[in-house]
Image 1: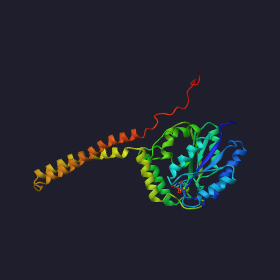
Image 2: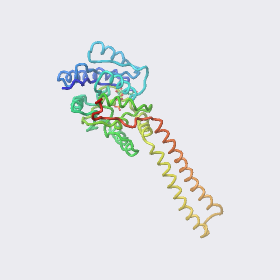
Image 3: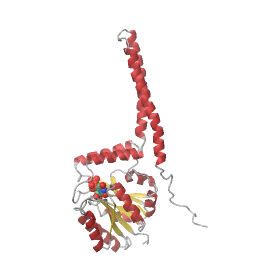
Image 4: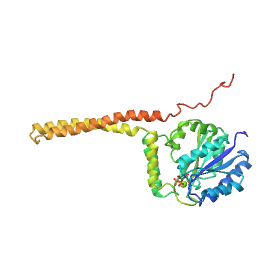
Length: 320
Ligand code: UDP
Ligand code: MG
């Protein structure tokens, strides 16, 4: 067995005092059995990230870290949201681990899939996605909105893994590559597939929240979807340009129609010129806004300063 196998399980927690005791217990069990079977090193640990909770979450984490040798706690100075809290945990854990697994505190993701992820890592994968094979535990509403979310995302050209949330394993170098994506509008599910490297997926059934309430009500979900699209795609701008061109084309039809009406005497005075101007100018304006938008879109892509490539291997590269 290789020695580069220190695992850090990163768990973002926001107001999770009800779920925390359950997740601390099951994650500890899973980690200890992985250590016992020598799949991960005894230095492995669980890092609970408190995302500025307003309840007792942090004092529970602190107390647990004192008595539980595999538990560590990280307290953020305020609430920065799930994605940023997760990133804070990943970057912190990556300093002292060879792989990280991110998982929510509510145990909706199957902790037993962690072992399968570690197996995939040990056989050479850099990124292992946890993918839900079943959503029957979610409410019908959550299911429909979540499926719609993936459909819209892919129509807008955002590469993301279907039915995968933020339950995944990443190797040390994958997290290091992730750190180079310096964007502030963080949408990890969209960024991780851009990193490349060898990826695998493990399948699991999604359970109900063990305790507490979802922190993603509809309003937050819509914002998340909108952020996801606008952080990855300038397709909506192209749609405006296309719409403008379509309306200019329609204005030609309106032009012919009004001319026919004019010559057959069915037109009020002044009507023909008005209709033609409205359609034509409307189309020209939309197309122009779209054109300006294309430049804004370019600026936006440049301003992200995303890495242009990640290197996987350099054969004979370390020979001097
Ligand atoms: N979370 C967080 N900061 C927030 C909101 C949520 O760290 O501002 C954490 C939360 O504690 C949980 C995970 O993100 O561990 C996912 O949240 P939740 O389970 O409420 O989302 P859902 O599964 O309903 O989509
Ligand atoms: Mg949840």
